[in-house]
Length: 270
Image (cartoon, rainbow, N blue to C red; front, side):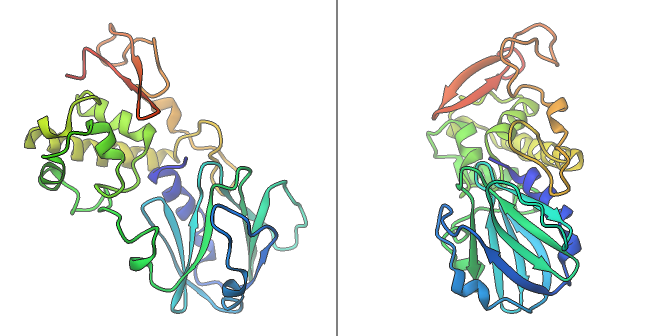
């Protein structure tokens, strides 16, 4: 599933549609993870997109007093196409047709979604989300008090979107390696100093990944058709039984936590 850097990369890539009028929305298959409200989307025809931004792993197109909320799910992608092009790819479910181009939502597994929203702060996908990891609100002090009574492993705490948004399986592994914290540590055992290290590493790793264009593993492509290139910089994720890039001695260990693969160095991560 795309994480914050991949979604941010997509948001940056589709900025050309900001301040353009949305001429029409073509819905070829409304049966995504949640059924698309076709009638509601018709209300947006002819209005201008004033802004395109992101909240957590969700993309928001602001139109008049409403928003289009896009979640890419496991395999969803956005593709920019020429307005006159009739090229069609299998699993193209929705097209947003603008003055100067088309934005196409493609999703083979249909775990993604698109919603008509009038109040994002109370929408069921957004109302319980924690702070953005790149914001001032997310810091060591906040994290320490948020998880100091939690029995869950610190990796699970980082992936809990009510604690902090946008961090999934790939970046939680990378962040904890950078912070020198073993992912199996119980959250309540972390000191305030260690929480500060995790917060700092979160900002460092996520900014690096955004600048590199996101991580390409299987399904993520930027809207311009290019792949993300952060994979070449991954320190531990998907590197089981390979030498640690930091200590050059220990082999990266792979375990399963909450049905997700976890990777870490037993020497570098206490």
